[in-house]
Length: 73
Image 1 (cartoon, rainbow, N blue to C red):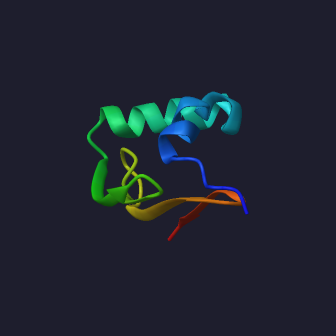
Image 2 (cartoon, rainbow, N blue to C red; image 1 turned 90 degrees about the horizontal axis):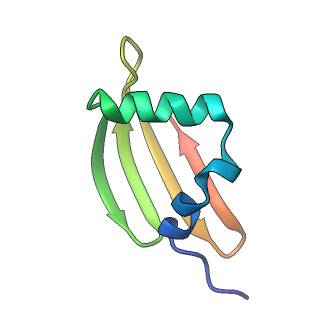
C-alpha cells in the first residue's frame, strides 16, 4: 500500500483537480473571510465554509492511499 500524499501536494495541483469556476468561487469565499478552520494536520482538514450570501457548510478533505477524498455537509 502506498503512502498518502500530503494535502499540500493536492493543493499545489488544485488547478488540475477543480474546474475554473470552482477555483474562482473558492477564491471568493476565502477572500470574503468565509472559511473557518476547525482542525487540520498533514492528511486531514475540517472547516466551516460560507460563501457570500450562501449557506454555511462543514467541509472535510482527507488524503488517503487511494487519493483525495472530500465531503460537504
